[in-house]
Structures are given as structure tokens and as C-alpha cells.
Length: 508
Image (tube, rainbow, N blue to C red; front, side, top):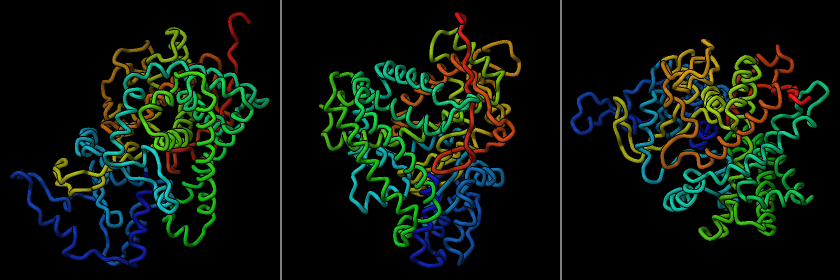
């Protein structure tokens, strides 16, 4: 998302310093009339936002957006200055950042039958250059809709079949925490550890019980290990390419682009090898692959599943890092949630669900979710031109005191309608909170297809961790200074170091 926003500069670079013509797009919008006779509708050009200075061209984007890692903070400042709607022009693209919950939801009403979202420029350029055909995330139009409708039922509506393989995989991951901790109980390389867990969860869903059979093979385990390492490199290279349009990075042959061109084919090769190994050694028909094999042609199915496991790593892994960090930083709340898990005797009690929702409110994986408006429409008090890019400012809305009481406070009980205890510091109702101000998976036809997998695996892993370990901050002074920055997604500004002290069982 962030890379797409900044990469609009690339449209301007071949033109040099660009000055918008007086009779160009902005001039036309200013002269537009209110739709359907509405007297209170203003033209798009009247929407407040930072002013573009003539003759500066792409330098406007550089000045307006600031450092890529701090875009969420810059946009929050603009919202404080200009209000819930902030108009910007990113290269030739009309864009609006929106913080108001009702307008955030309304965005999805104007996305059209085939919703379009902005894509990472490094990926789209690479796909075009090498003629790579990709999965659901990169598909549009009827092809996307037909494939998406096939996946909606097993992944979003009738998903109970996924619960057992995810639970088994999470339990196996818990067993590996102790052996991967040092003598101070600090889990070494927690990001990479959770990367592998997230990839294995997706594979368990794809292959069903055959995943455990495949894991007995040293060849398969080696493929998964290599894939987990390489896909992490993709994330790193992609974030390093945010500052330069990929065509220029390619032309100049800069090192991050050289690495990107190496790791992407290797990642796709490994993902394909993993899937083909699973198909060849499948003894069951209870995985997603088997559900899809008769509904999709094999090339399309392979493309979609390759993208599934590539996307699995960074998003859920970092969301879980943030959740564990927040629990470690708030030991009283951690104990309260632990008690709720034990009392409920389930891996999906309301308190754990609240931990995940609260984590994604404070640290949304994608701080901006974008949709292109299909047709000219009225949006709040303004008339939006066709193809305007509307960006939901999830980070800003999630920390707005109008929408959440004490917004900077981590309170997993704020999502419950009825109080979960007698602790006055953790109110258990939604008074003063607006749930629709936090939409981490988006809504509508193009909402995140993997949201149920992500929620289940986070609920299960966090519940199992809390019933087995006390999670603490290692190097507390340093860890309390952790801040969110953007590297394609929301990540900590320094490595998170967490300790996992085993909780003695009653029998011991």
C-alpha cells in the first residue's frame, strides 16, 4: 500500500517538473455542478488538503508524504489539520484519506462489482517484466470474481473444517518455544519463528491431515525451512524499494532490486515445489487443495495457492508479535486474559478475541486500505471523480478519542458488551467505542480472503501461549520504547525481545 502511494512519483519522473494545467483535471472538477440538485455538495477540488505548488511536480509528493516509515504519522497530522477527509494528488492520481467510520464503510459501497485496490509497484512491475501470472490479490474483473466466489464458501462461510489442522499446528509450535529460548528464556528470532508457524498453518489448511504425513519427510521439511527464510527476504527487499520506482531501480540496477529479482523466482519455485509435494503425497481429501482441485484448472489453482503461502508470513506473524508485545507490556491484563482462557476451556474465548481486535486497532497490519471508486459519487459533502483512490486511515481512526475511549490504552475488553470482570480499569462494554472505526480485514466483496485463517491461528496460538507461559519484556527499558514504523506493513522499529517463562502445572 505504502509503496503504491509513493511510487506515483514514477509517473512524473519522465516528464521532469510537472505543472498542472489550469484547464486540466482540477480545473474541470472545480467547475462541476452538484449531483442530483444537491445544494450542499462541494466539488472535489474544495476538499481540504495540502496544497500542491506549481512547478514542483513530483517534489510535492516528497514533501507531502515525508519519510515512508512515518507515513501513518504524517497522515494523522493531516487529519488533525484538515479533518476526516484529506484530499491529495499523488502524481496524476486523485486520492482521499478518510478517517470517519461511516465514510470508511461507505467506501465499500462505491467499489463496484469488481473492486480494485492499489498494488505494490515492485510486484506489478516484476510480474509484467517476466510475464508472471499471479493469484487472487493481483487479479481483477470477472476472472477475479469467479475465483473469489469459489473460495468464499470454504474460507469465509463454512470454515469449521479448518479448526483442527490449525489447532494441531499451533500446538506443535508451542512445543518448539522452549527449545528455541536461550538461558534467559528469551525466544531467539521471534519474527522468523512466527514466520514459519504462519506458513505451516496455511500449509496445514491446504493439505489437511496430509500435512502431518508430509512433515515426516526430510525433503519436505527442508523445502518449508528454505521457503520461510526466502519469503522473509522478499518482505525485506520490498520495503527497501519503497523509496524508488521499480523501473528506475531496475534501470540503475540498485542492490535491493537485484536481490528482489533473485528471491521472487526462488520463492515461487519453493512454494510450487511444496504444493506439488503435497499433492503427490496426499493420502486424504480434507484439505483446501482437494476441495479446489475439481473447481479450478491446475495452473490457476497453483497461482492462487502460491500467493496464499507467500502472503501468509509477514502479515499474521507481525500481528502476533504485536499482540504478544502488548500482553507482555501489560502483565495485569495478561493474567486476566489467561484466567479467561482457563475458565472458558476454549481456545477462542471473548478475551482472546479482544486481544486480537485490540492489537489490530492499535497496530493495523495495513494502516491504509485502498479502493478505487467505480463511478462518480457523493462522498460526505464532496463529489468524487470516477477512479478516485480512497484510502482508509485505519491507524488514525483507531487512535481517535472520538471513536475509542482512552484510545492509546490497550484494553481487550472494550470489544465486549458485558463486563468481563470487576476490574474498573478494563471496562467490558462498547460505550465510547466505535467498532466500525477499525476494519483491519476490510469489508465487502474484496475483504481479506484469509481473515478466518488469520483469526483462528492467532486466537489458538495466543491461548496456548498464555496457558503455558508467562510472557515478559526482555530488556524492559529498551522494549518499552518500541514504536510502529511502516515497511510495507506495520512493524516494530527494533527487534522485539520476549521472554517465555514456563508456568508450572498443578501436578508439578
